[in-house]
Length: 105
Image (cartoon, rainbow, N blue to C red; front, side, top):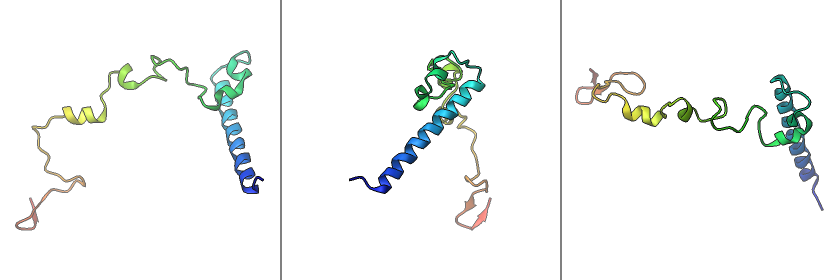
């Protein structure tokens, strides 16, 4: 019914999940969670969530830095940069080449 290859895949997946949970428990213990905490008592709560993620979107570690610190996105920074100041350089840093003469300016 089941192929040996499928059994190996399932065993590998289960092993990876278990190792990931153990790693998150180790992180939780290093961040001063004690043995009375739910994270340590029920380690498989960490199968899909990280130990350091509190879930609070207002937390400076877990939240979006654009909303917390008021940072702009890369697209917003590009839009608001000074466009009056021209750049006479290509993306590789070389000056543009005059096409008619074939020399750089």
